Length: 292
Image 1 (tube, rainbow, N blue to C red):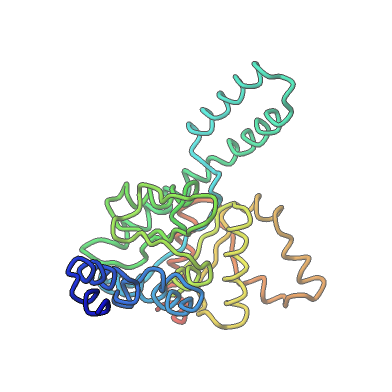
Image 2 (cartoon, helix red, strand yellow; image 1 turned 60 degrees about the vertical axis):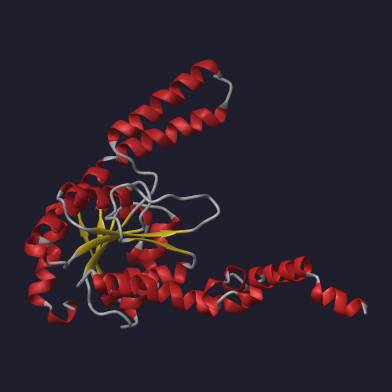
């Protein structure tokens, strides 16, 4: 008798129906965030991360890209000077704090590098204007979407009223996209490896400005792909010979027999935006295998 009373209790039945409708088991699989974020669904998430940007870039008819890498800490001269002034004032109040003096020394070095921000911005503006006329979507600038040199490159395309791409990454130290990326062409990644695939997939050149671990990681990734023949013969340009010749002793690697002498030809140096662009144009005209 009690069982019948329970099944006839309208409120109880109504509440049970609500529990059914709100349970994860009733959600469509692609709407179940708990499922999608589980360890078992990692492969699905990776497939989505490959497919989503690819579909959008295809829809936007992005034919080819030029990668611009560089340090997130390299700002324009005005911004760096402002930070220097602020630290200087802090030192006046707390002259005993050595970490502030160290910070000031680093900012002075970054100030000396601030011209690279201007160069990245000019390079991007130059390339974008020359290649995105009449609706053409070739040689589109792509960056990591963050601050510093990445911001400068996206900003150059923005200055020219042209499109640019940002491939941002979700990391513990929160990183926001810079405001100069073309809306609809800014992507957020969870996996570094898949982000790298999208950097390289459409690239016909890569320009590396001074940078830290992230820039070095991307540089050696691309050099390895070129060395092993896994990527076609695109120009890899190290912008700022003075910096790069001190940062990495490539000749030492060749002298020790760790790389072939010919591997030193996988990259070239440039010191001005126009010089970098001329290298890319020369390769495009004289090396058919470098053209997608």
